[in-house]
Length: 397
Image 1: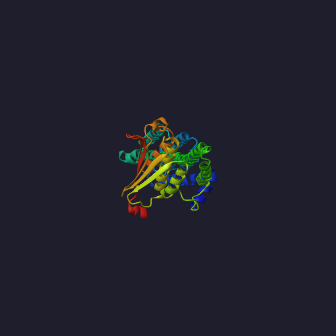
Image 2: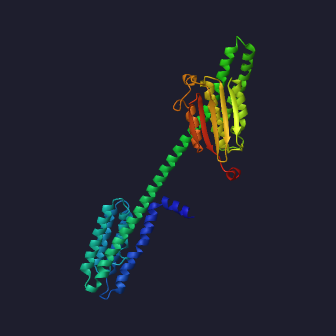
């Protein structure tokens, strides 16, 4: 009901202003009759006070367009009524107080207080001149001026609250925009890592298999044919993962029908795929393996996958050792290639080269882990990361 009346008021602004002003006219008219009722002297003539009150209320229709002019006119009307002998009560000063409140809502603070002091001084001067008894100076001088300053203070308070609300809304909008941009950047980085891991891994294996098959084509054609026959498996696996990744990007809402993300359970298949490309992979597991959360499981799998891909592309010797060390609080992954001194000459990427190591580092840090990659003192290259494991209570909840 409230919203409906609000919309109606917005559509009929002028009609609402006229109605409000008409209701406001009752206050100064009441002040005029109150003066006549309490006056001990000869009865006052009503019509000058009624006319001046009507004029003061009528000019309020333009208070939003010309607030200072309206304040000046209403002040003149009230001062004239004071000189005619009417008591300067809050009822009689109603139109002037409304005009002062409207001026106080403006952002120009100097104009607010200058106008308030000027209006209060004018009313105080009127009360000082028209007050006969020295005992009535509080009612005729201080009280009217205090009402004006109080209304100006209240209007300034309302203005400050509105400005604060606007500033707070703008700040909240800026924070939402910054948070949206941050999430977009994070999502782009996540998608880039996924696509890089999928494409780089399978293309590197396919390239290694094709190179090995070409090398053995003349001397060992049977082995070359066997390697070529395994190429469709690698490309089919790449297409499946790409289809799953792109399918997630095209979905408008979350779906429970998407294929599960790869994890360490697919590590034997990953080792077999690398072996078909000529990479000898040895896997060692220490500690008691336990199920991992999906995000952590995917992170561990992608790090092992990318490390083996780098060894396939860059290592001088096609061999790798993968070690998974489970502790109650951490999972440590170590992927080592003992390639000797030829590794650096083969162009194995350092910590600042390529996107593979950068992606592995970002994955490890995103789950609160640590990451290190570099040449080993005894020769070769090693990738090591430690991923924090949730407590048994958290993993079962």
